[in-house]
Image 1 (cartoon, protein in one colour):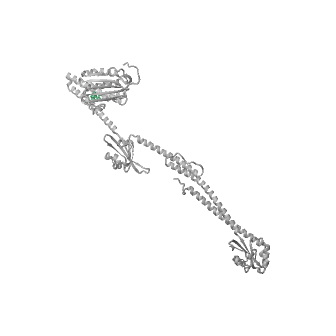
Image 2 (spheres, helix red, strand yellow):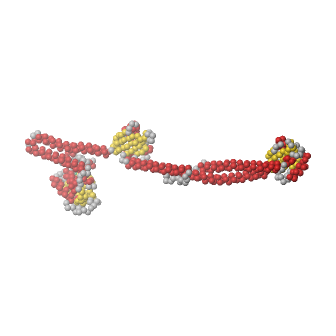
Image 3 (tube, helix red, strand yellow):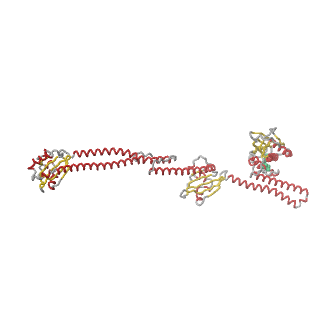
Length: 607
Ligand code: ADP
């Protein structure tokens, strides 16, 4: 946009300024030359008139009644008195004969041949002074002046003066030339000054233009330099103010945009914005993830129905547009393995006109699962409590109906009631512990202890139970020394006892249970392997769920609550550890508990 051509303001100012100057100068010159010429002519005429009048020539010649007869005398007078007169002076009688002249070539000739007979005639007629401008025979410009010679009231002739104007003309021509030269020089000076003036006006404008160019490319760093306090300076000042405001506003907009973009990028909810034709305006990363769209895919070519509308009938563009007419809508839709809650509403432009629809998607799969789990949990708890209660109730009723009178029956019934009550107590105890663990209210007394010793102690405790089932409970480790772990000893004992008792429970009589403990890097691994009934691969991941039991009846008959492994997992995780299970049906199961080894050397245990 460099405007340095002939259309630039600078060029125009220079041209207009120069032309203006030229016109003024030309007018002044013409006027002056004219005045000079007039002045020269009038002073020439005045000089001649004064000379002729003061010399009393016309008056003295008026003494002659007729001029021609006295021409010799008159010529004598002229020769005597007018020989030094610079102009040509002649005396012409009323018959237009030149009686006498300072130019001897004219004497005796007819004035009509050499002079302007018109002014002679009018002078003879009016008796007044007449004049005219003509050219002489040699093409020399001349001024003709006629003064009447009066004899009384009769004009007897004229004194005819012919003044050569060539010197005046050449003076005027000279003057003109000087003026033209002066104009030419002044024009050059004007052009240069005009350029300087114009550039002082246009430089700030060019500065503004350049700055605007930079601003349009996003560079707001430079302002226009303010060099004066005049209108242009004020314009530059105002422009700088405008630039600052624009810069501030744009940076605010850009901050807001960045903020919005960060929010959109990191928000957990999916957001899709579409226009009313269903073209995708924006889909944030969460939405792309939910809808299985590549994060880098250009969505300008995809339409709404191809990414969202096809999922459910309720989500079709026409449907959601219809719902948006009154107020936004909401819906829940399912993909292969996820559940989404959707809310949508219109968004408007500055004039309040609808321009698109915003769709917010929430992945509620986990929430849904949690809700399902809660429902299941309540159902399970109710069921687990109802079963022993029913048993207690029915045995109590039977006893009350008379069975109490048979001491043997009464004894066995009361044992059953006692067992069921124990089971309920265990169940409630387990539930309370789980609840405390959930709410982090289970008080853990962490202290450094020897995990090898703890494992040995648990094996000893469970050995009697294993022996009752003729099972071998083997400690596979020799003497690994101390492996110190930061733990709540009672809780960790509960964990080991639970895993060991499960191994005994779910292994047939005469089976074998091997327990091992070993160091692996910064961790200690405790493994409990049995060759019991095992579990299928589908069941394995679920055994840590609350109330999940592979064989409900078997578990229940063995006094299990279905909460043991759930509690175990929670306790192990409180110790920053993990518990994993491998199993194959009919072959056996292996549980591995991993705990971090304490980094402190600690004081040797005195348990
Ligand atoms: P329960 O009180 O029923 O034992 P747990 O939470 O301790 O509850 O165990 C959950 C389920 O995991 C058990 O019902 C059983 O089906 C399965 N299970 C646990 N340990 C073993 C094991 N060693 N062998 C086979 N199945 C097991």
